[in-house]
Image (cartoon, rainbow, N blue to C red; front, side):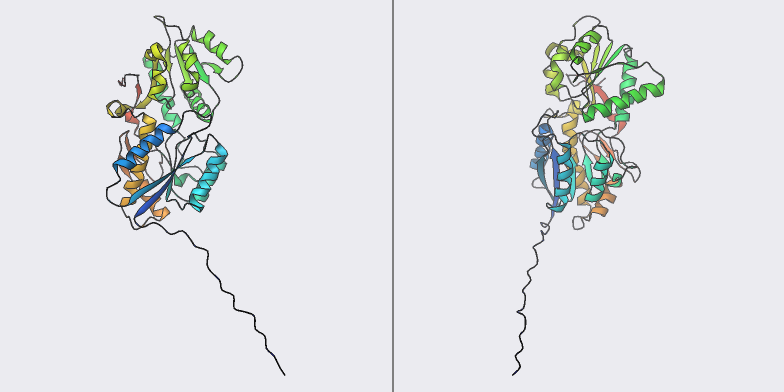
Length: 346
């Protein structure tokens, strides 16, 4: 007697794959909503939420934003870049925290393979690894440095200059660009002060007493006490704050706010709702992505979306952004100016 035994048939159920929500463009937004890093990402989040509220009933595609708190961690930025693509299937990513376009970061963007918009100053990314996916909406550090030196010279306060830094990512980039621009023009180098060193505050006060200008390449809020210590005299130095300055930061300087100026868009003087340049740029980021996606709502392939961004001209509330295949820094330099607390350009 022959008996044949067959293995039972195995039923295989495929793992569900997230499908795209119809007529929806998904964006992950990485911000510092907690943690010690300044400035806070909350003004950017508020501005983007305002855009979402205003655009809720407009034509396709509908933009869906997911806000992610990276809590001041560079490592978490890299982690959330991967998670945005692998788990959330984001069509694009907006990063509103200071980043250095180093090998690790640009490689992570290359691997992500979706457009990444940076709302804070960063070097021109087009020539870097991952640069073809990276778009900078703010002025580059080199552009800011040229504008700063021009303003210092026009007001006759180039030297003696106090250059204060806290060695944060944004401060190092900003300081390096300024020193490079001064060297390129053969101009006198400033007195450097590292605010996070034990003797930093004391050196600030000593140098501020004789300086014609103070350049703070660091967020203003943590160092408000030092700015408020600047003597209010007829020869008080002109205080240059970072591009990352929020109007509330300047208001906290009280009577010293009249000494302060900072780079931003000339258009923020007429914006309603008190948007800063940085917050306005975050607002524009969603508009830029929506404009690129709306050109072909049924085709949101990452490479084609990148191509649309590279040929895009977008009139935002901060500036008119223009990108090309070889230029991924879109801020119009003619809109860059120096602002005062009263939001009057000069």
